Picture 1 (cartoon, rainbow, N blue to C red):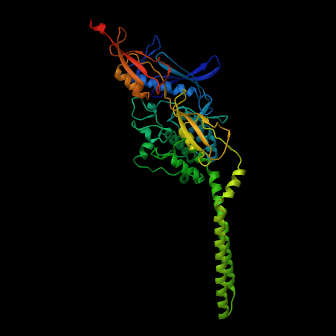
Picture 2: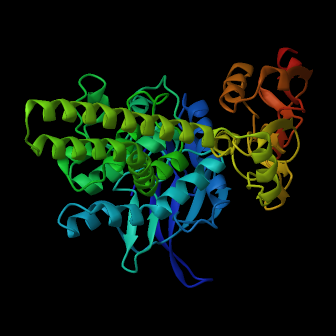
Picture 3: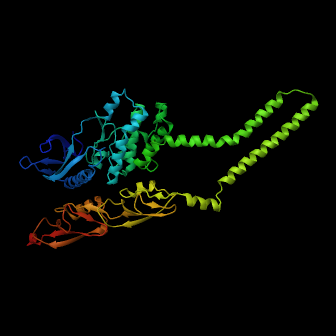
Length: 490
């Protein structure tokens, strides 16, 4: 199995006695292999592209190793660099693609079964996003189902492989890849995975692959799920359409929000029930009025009796109107809290439990703020190697007790750590391109020149931070020293 920048081999782990999958960084048409040493050599003129692609590959799989606790992901057991390339050792998951599983179910799943199957995928994507990764390939081809019912997400690849128009052979999934993946100038965000997962669920419950995103930008004729399968709950149909919006800024922004919207049926039923109960008292007097009027109309009599009936109807109408006014006034008065009511409520309220936000990205945490009961303060800190934007601590801590109106302070890591790479042999221009690609601010690095007999003239021969070290670009400075080969001119 090959992607644009890597290939897979079947392997066997002798130590643990298990099948494994070995994924090697091997960009198509971008390198060659020395048959004697096994080393990969970048083709002439493609050195910079090779190095940046290798860096992306390493960043992806090193982060995936951190997620071995997540049952919904095909695990990366080990990762290492060797032979001027890199290798990811992955578990061999015995499952079939979701697309084949759907075929065994006559091409469509009912809503309850689909929602149950997707639970591990919700969890997997939330974990992936917590380490600042985006999958970009969620589809029925990258979700696998085993015979014992386990469900796992696979198909991990670098950004360039999941973007049309890059220097590598792109591998997109028609109907499931998001609109922004068809452009090299668009950002990929968490909403990119929201689109892929929404499209996958759409396929499961309708039996129809969504219209390809690139075509939707020209002429959007995607059908709402409920129109293709009337048994789909309306709230689920509407939620999926919000997850499939073309503009990612308008699309559902996180997997957690998508999950909450797709499980909203109980809330909707509760709201409908409350609404029905709330209108009963108001309609009761009106029903009584209709009954009384009907009874009076059935009576017959003389002209004088008709006058009496008219008076009776008028009197009864006034009486019922007074009842209506009384009910409305009583309802409003009972809803207005008095000072004593507030004091009594405060005395009877049980202590509140502080929610947990530590370990969440601040964007996701903010979606779960309980602003009715608490106020929030966010403080930036520049310590630790946690991902930038992660809540690394909170006060009060989770599960402690608090009162309504208490303040929860969240400490968010703003230190931007990057894993240092080897800049040796690069010109200043190429090194700057790499630094920009790493997301480093120009203030966090500096170039110097030094006379030496090492390296090539005007290329980096020395750096202040060794390759492989986690570098805090928020508070430290990288010094790259360029070689000045004066001996070449003697």
